Image 1 (cartoon, rainbow, N blue to C red):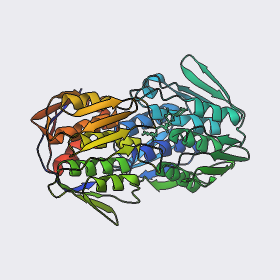
Image 2: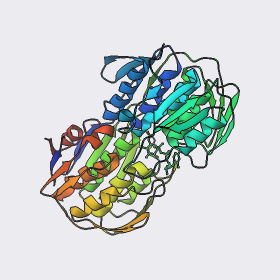
Image 3: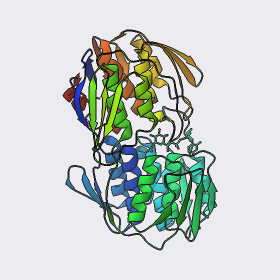
Image 4: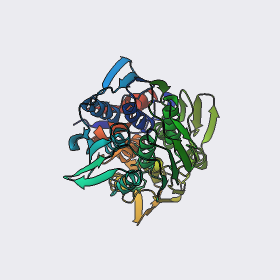
Length: 417
Ligand code: UD1
């Protein structure tokens, strides 16, 4: 298993290219199951999770062709299987995203339950109940969600929580259903809108995505399309936090629209100068120590839970005290124990943590536990005194393309061993 050896102390300075968004790529790849014609994708990130999804699509019978790095075409004419096996789903919960399209197009899907997860219970009840409301018979047996239908029917679905992949699964189930589906309290994340745009490019009739009420008028079939994946707002945010923590200057460059939302305000509250322009965001901390920032995570347009761990690392070395509240996932503070091993002063208070900034962190052996937690350990290691060894970096590789190379290009000193 790969490790990172990080020598702390560098001030980051330079430009970093932002890859396609993992959370946009995964549902859009699943959407390729909805049409026999190819879905051609550009700006597909080279990530472990993307390879897991492509592997799953191949198991289902899809043809996957890559013409150039980041360019892939996927089509499914005749399925070879309707089942997402445990071995894949347990490594990537987003495998659940094949449930909606398989059921909508073929009337049949068996998807393993994701099982335990490092960031809380993460149930699937909302996905399952919505598909039942649309007329599917869904049973949980042998550790699998087993869903069957003879054509789904449009329905009104009130989500108890604006679940992101839940909204995406329902959308993909609804595009080929008979009649109209209305999703109330839908997730509003930019990646949901990107999926809806992709489905519409394939001939679907989706309106309102990006808002909390999405309507879908079912059509008979979808066709192929060509799309570029959105840039990754979480990856960009992570490098900008790295710039702020090291007192440096980082310019994130991207193609397309980068929706940073509340992250920009939070970065400005650290005392950094943040400038946005066509295709770039620049953060300049001008050699200063960041101020602490209080945060409460919330579904979009709130502060993203996927940036909480990175800002917790920033607060660990900031100049005052901060309260960070996690309101999306319980137990998403796995990084706290590891940051404390590096000398952070963090007091857990239920779903909140109180962080008293210290001047310096110290290098220590630490363990990555989930994707964003591991990103926060990389950030902490960049500013720690000495050489930090981060174990189990496969968690980082799930969602960051060549993170050590990109950070080294900015002046960091990270070795993969
Ligand atoms: C997606 C993102 C993940 C991000 C999260 C929240 C992808 C591939 N992953 O995950 O990076 O951290 O959104 O922004 O896009 N819930 C239920 N029942 C359900 C489904 C969800 O109770 O059936 C709860 C969850 O436990 C959680 C909340 O809803 O408390 C939000 O989770 P959800 O939006 O579903 O997260 P994911 O879609 O899994």
